[in-house]
Each structure stands twice: as C-alpha cells, then as structure tokens.
Length: 131
Image (tube, rainbow, N blue to C red; front, top):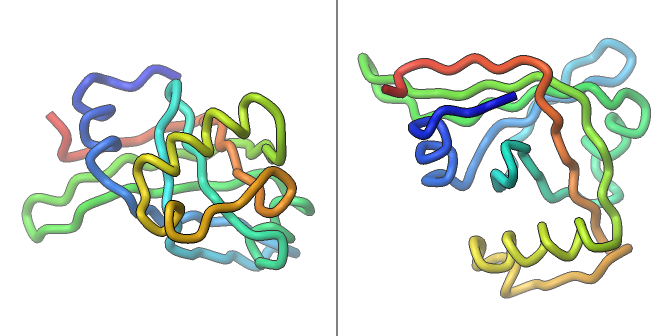
C-alpha cells in the first residue's frame, strides 16, 4: 500500500497513535508510540500486555494516527495484519529507529527477546485532512 508524500510527512511528524486489537470479540484500544518504516507501521509493546495477548490470539489490528483540531482534523487510519518481530536484523533496524526517535527508549533500552515490536501490514488505509 503506497502512501502519498504528504501522508509520509504527516506520519513522520508524530509520535503517538491509538492501536486497536481484540480478544473474544472485545475491542481494546490503547495509545502507543510508533514509527513508519518502508510504508509499514511499527509499534513497541511488552510481553505482559493485553495488546500482546490479543495479537497472539488474533493478528488483525487497526491503528489511527491523528491530530484533532476542530475544523482541521488530520488522520491516517490503517487496518491490517500484525507480525511479531522479536529478534534478528529487522528487529535491530526498527530498534535503532525507535532509539533515535524516542527519549524513553534511550532512557530505558532493551535487547532482543526482552520486548517485541508489532509490524502492522496495512490492508486498508483511509486518510483525511492531509493535502
């Protein structure tokens, strides 16, 4: 799924999103830190979270990255399948991007196997307010 130049600029300018997962048809939404890399969305999580448990049970998820301003709302929403990245070259590459972008990662670093990344592979995308 291809993103426009303006969508990429918008996504790269933000740090927070809302990730939706579900378990037994019960929705679960939480704020997350994310990065955009090669038109894919990556989110850091921990092994003991509801999000982790949900993805293990049901790898489908949605994420909304937006800025709300009355009359000027901007957003990109994705729906897709999630792959879990726990180690290897892809983990290392994504970790370095998170490390550069987020102070909380630099303040509390982790190693492969200590916390995974979730890679959302978009199947649907909707955006608005982004010219």
